[in-house]
Length: 257
Image (cartoon, rainbow, N blue to C red; front, side, top):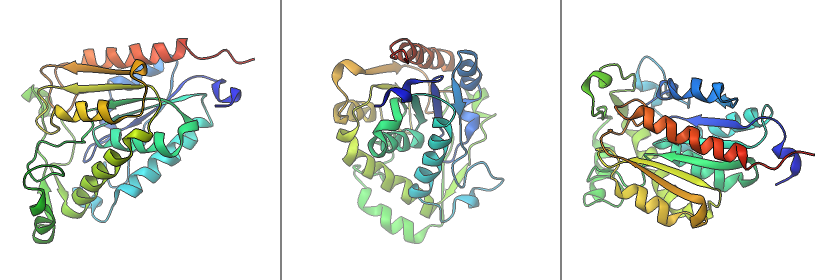
């Protein structure tokens, strides 16, 4: 990593999950800005529209391209960049780290969906039925997963998604799992044991599959939250974990000449 990459403030790229939006980070982003971090939170293609139909025909390559463009824009404003991804965003973050290792200081991977709870997901008992369902169905429901029903009522994520976009998302999880060993940056993993969308085993798969040295890998568990870690009942503790990690990365940066 060249010395000029360490000049300027720390940058933090926030990547939301499948069917979600930048609203995921509504409470986190102001805290990062207050800490002096330059933040960019792109809206990934097909998300944030009035209808989930906007995701039709969108693939994981499109989301990766959107994240890569945002990363380049952030690097023009900041020094080293941490990439934080929630759910699908965590998968995209890992791929960015593989494809652009010189651009990324470290990763925060929250509720990374390597092992989904659904029996139809990759690596699950009914996986063989998924292609058939993809031909028979045009959409799939995606109910929110919150421990606190009051918080679920304010969720803005899509309640359903087009089937082709869902299949692409599932393909992304397979691609990332195969390339985990190519990730070598420091990583903070965040996961809830009560997540009903992404199985807790996903965090263990992630930790064991990464190429990151063990001394630069940390897993923080939460006990009560649903899948929406940054918006559910333990959001304060989740944000504190992120801010502590960011502070550590800031304080260990080499001083620019």
